[in-house]
Image 1 (cartoon, one colour):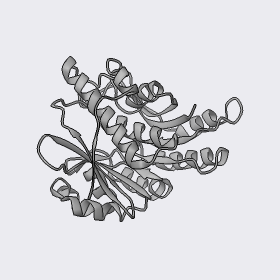
Image 2 (cartoon, rainbow, N blue to C red; image 1 turned 90 degrees about the vertical axis):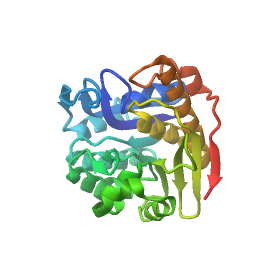
Image 3 (cartoon, rainbow, N blue to C red; image 1 turned 45 degrees about the vertical axis):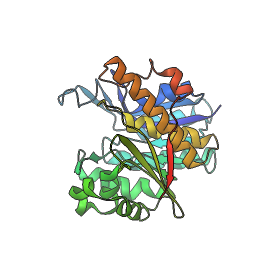
Length: 282
């Protein structure tokens, strides 16, 4: 059984950050060690004055996790929400330490910094992610705004209007072997797309759109992608499986009228999705 170290936010109520990653991956047979970068009562989208507890010293806690009670190697690391700029350096140190225990393990970077042409974190956090985490990543899963923030920050307000070809071009400027651009332009109405981009290929992965607005889908997608690849899966089938699961979870969420991802109600579909994602070479 593989074990994944997931470094991201934690909410007491709901399913975003590590709370969107841990249960679904466990349901798919992957153990998850969850290290919080911040603890929130719930997602700030519900109310901006949410109670929170800062986690400034994640390096010491992460080192204790990896070393307790004897060296505890993990098979992959997911770096998600960075709450404080110095945490990017700490996360880089933890990735290096995890790779010292088990050489060559993959790191997926989910740079959670903005959407719809705007940042929702301090720009210094973006700078620290770019300097410290991007060079260590094997896979990155930015949305279009986050991709532009990391590669062409002066153009961030134009991110929502970027076309497919320009997105592919920017992704190849990011020094990460595999970039999965989430919430990318789709082939038509009623479709949701992610684009897998490497030096050699660009592939669109699509599912039908589900008419529901909840947070945490990017966290869930990123966790599933890393979970599929640490098991030896190729990136395109991994993204196709992850996209299908996200679609099925959203469908259950919409049917239940929930304001959070219905991961418990959808657990059978997380284990065995019924949707098949459509894969198209670009």
